[in-house]
Image (cartoon, rainbow over all chains, first blue to last red; front, side, top):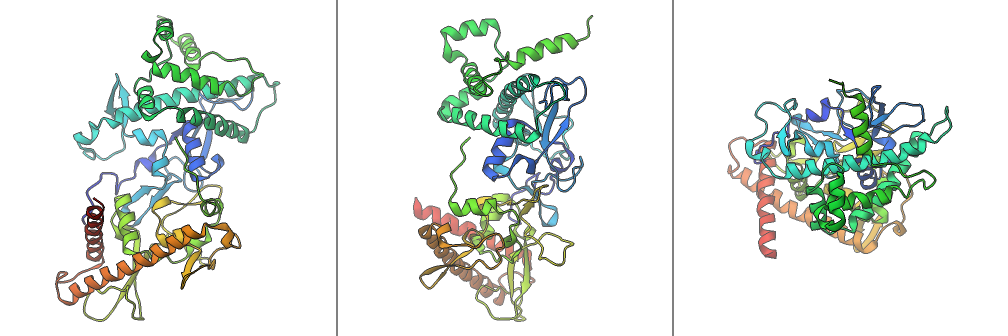
Length: 267
Length: 204
């Protein structure tokens, strides 16, 4: 066969054994490009008690996370809803150009600023050549995933601030959360379109944790020193346009740091 | 993070939930096969079936000199349903029952053109196999559809020439002692690679 060898061509194990987590931008991208309602391809599940990430549907309700649906009734080890199963054991992603961030970075993770292969990757031993693993695009994709996750946390924090103001014992339907997601990410997409390719690349490459006081002070005088910070501020402005009756919440990463510190065991 | 604007026809097609047309038999051209195989990085035989054709056709290939001729079609998914034809191997079904083509813009030209076709110089709509709506020429961009239908015809003619060259090779014993379907698929990929290189060279 003249097709070049490809470790993923006859494998597709990762499309069968994992629960694929989704962030808001994944849902928006798949929904708008495939013209599918989120309910068609997203499953939501409650995070374990004690979790601090996720969205609520009721003020006293659990925190939920989103994942890609599976074929047929949901089961962890079923094939992804978008997996094309071809003859001869070949399989391919049916939405490859629009696949979620988690699939784009697999099997890599970020470790001390580097892209390294997951030690628990489902790929058969030797599937990836060292040249493929050294590809610099992994780092870009991991950076983009971090950025999307941070912005999603801000999006969810805004929603949760709204839910927290509901009377106890009431709640909102999941469909309303999805509507909010599609609306807010439409606004974020419009923001992204205002950036040229080079500027966006600098935002992604410099993406970091939320600013320290020193960062904020420096950013006032040197806005170009922290392109990601400037972008995050603009993204927060887009997000905070929703639910104007709800007071502006603090940056989610700061809140999370405090919560984690409270839960950290004391020496 | 742009979403490209879609034509009205594409919007209608995407919005259709059952996609009954995706249960029809789809005969791709050689260029369709090459395009899909190269885009997915999978061999053609992983998504094609071949079947004997009793009537002489110019797009039918041979594997020996017995006189038997074959055609190709997109494979179908295994299905337990017997009342309805099985769906295309590339059709995805969501949990809520919507369907999407996993090939997207790489789907065969015949699928892209459906339900339009050229009869002589007249663009007609032949929506047999469609259950979601009554199509009208008002739903389509006529100039775009005419160009698409003309491209379909041109690629069908190109494929006939490719098949005829293969059949001559087999008849002359130049395609190996026992050419099989995999060898034919390999031949298609090599031939269209060369044609594409020629296209590129012509443009340069």
